[in-house]
Amino acid sequence: MIDILLSVLILTGAIFTFIGSLGLARLRDFYTRLHGPTKATTLGVGCLLIASAVYFSVREEGVSLHEVLVTLFLFITAPVSAHLLAKAALHLKVRSLVATPPDNDAPAE
Amino acid sequence: MRRLLPHPLLTVSLALLWLLLVNQLTAGHVVLGALLGWLIPFATSSFWPERIRIHHPLTLLRFLGVFVIDIVRGSFLVASLILKGPKRLRPAFVEVPLALETDLAIGLLANTISLTPGTVSANLSADKRTLIVHTLDTGDAAALVAEIKQRYEMPLKKIFEEGSE
Image (cartoon, rainbow over all chains, first blue to last red; front, top):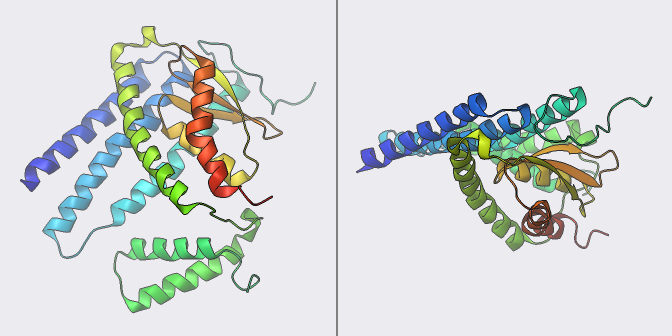
């Protein structure tokens, strides 16, 4: 029973991680590409981590909570890196499919 | 009291973080965690100019619930958008005027936006009044802004800023 649950979680995780990476390859400009890794991959990795927590809690002594920490750090770092990438891209005027907003960090001329 | 323990919430969370890191609950580690939680805020005090206060714990819990649901929802949405193909997307930059004033609340809002359906926060204006958000697929920018404000900003404002002025 637990094996079925674990398999489902791992498969779901793998599928979402794959779709996230697919988005990275398939989407057409830098800004839309940012969306794949920040979201689909988050849920994918989340599923894998839940599977890991369940597996090690059941197979070994005691509850395994390291995964909670990994999730926490991931939720803190993924949006921050995405934000910084987007900010840098705006600053460098990376080609975009739509009009970009003004860059407020550009040096005054 | 205030000088000795400048950030009680931070202390508690750091102690819990330590216990999660070592993954075992023994008296020694509880003491060590508490000690670290007490000392680290002093070393990093320049990051925390104001004392963090949570005004409505229940609102915080409800916000976390909405947050988790939206992460799942957002992942499915982005996954389906990617699979449908990039040609159908209607990406756009949207400006969200901010009602939040503290750095922590703005940071949390930006993080939340990046983790939830189809949006990534891209830039904060220099006066901290507008957040520029990139959205993957939108038909109605005004509705999106209204949703962000109502779903995420209002609870954050209530939790971290209400009553502080």
